[in-house]
Image: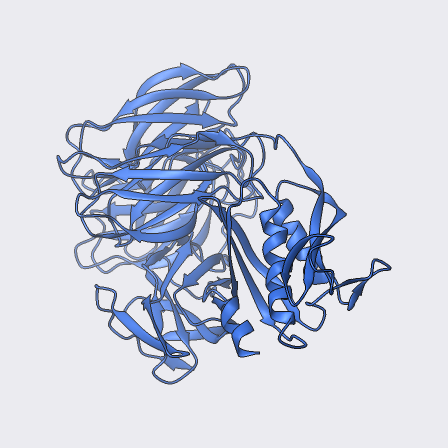
Length: 570
């Protein structure tokens, strides 16, 4: 099934939803993809929010401005959020901008479209092979026409690197074959193309996976009629650098901005070259240095004064033998205004730490994304907020429980609009949890106890703590609530204590403590056995949270509505 794109209005509309007699405002749905470039057959990660809870949506992708194909259907979670992935078809054309669409199944349903992402690389199947194995045959030579120029970029990378081929001075409208091979050897034809009417050619070529670090490779443009044989500059193959990362701060600023650079995963005690250049272009070496005994390195690099607003630059840290290399995420060049900055507190802590985020220098009254991630890697968008009239952002995020101790994390704030300002914080160092909890209390009901065994809650009942073992964790409240909801019997063992939740089918969506308030979000169905069960249910959940010294108050939600709404309806 194919659907035509609908035009999106740049300003998010506020939509009034009427539910249970109360008005609720929500922003229009949004969708984001990662990474921002992918080869045919590659996989993209898709996240979306702002849709209705637990509804079916269609997920599709296609070239920007053209039809798109529905690839799958999925269901949002109780928060109206979605996380899924799509495989880009092998037939996708390199160099084309694609977008992702997520839309509700219902007619006139909500729809969201991602920012464009680029299809890179080339289809894997070669069109012809002139030489299965390199031989000692003479290398192809450049024709005497000095006006012809064939340039590839980047000029270094591991096997599998996607390189851009740009040529000029070729015969107009000529049909050519494009080959790749080791310098001073024969080459394999990997694709064909047509020179444009200006004698120019712009194409993509992938360095084969079997290329060895230390080898030099070239790209060749070949044709029999008219006779063409042009050879590019050389590409130096380096080792795969999946574990080598580089983080920079800030992520945007005017020409002349000083960028703090931190790299890890480098060879220990090795000489390095540090360069800077435009994205998808060659770079200039601006300094040298040496990694420490742990393979780490830090320095500062200045954005050139001739950099232009809107350009994206990257920092490159490479071993001098070019066998190891790391490339930073892009730095966005802005105008002469002060670049945005992000500060966080605290700067270290175990997984689950709540971090206060303060940012400034952003456009006033503008929607921004706030997220966290391991430095040098993609980050997950945690929330969207608006800057104030002075361009400031104040919020908080939580370092996920899956963050590994020892990992350097960072917080990123960026304008939602494509090409908008962005900034990253200094490093947040993930530490080992100081204390792991292996026991907690759950709370049950002593019917007719009248406060003798615990806190009196009405109907002559008491709510009573029962200590239980749990798997060692930094989140005992979450473990306690989950354990309480897992009890499916009316009476708890031989204790004589009553469980008012036994008829219900509930699960935990999230538990968070913010400003000493525990916010518990549940989903499922609630069933109680009479008027006295309502205060019993509330007491069992609330007291399980209030046992902790970090909690002064409790808010409980069921299927995104207040728990009290459900209790009043019973």
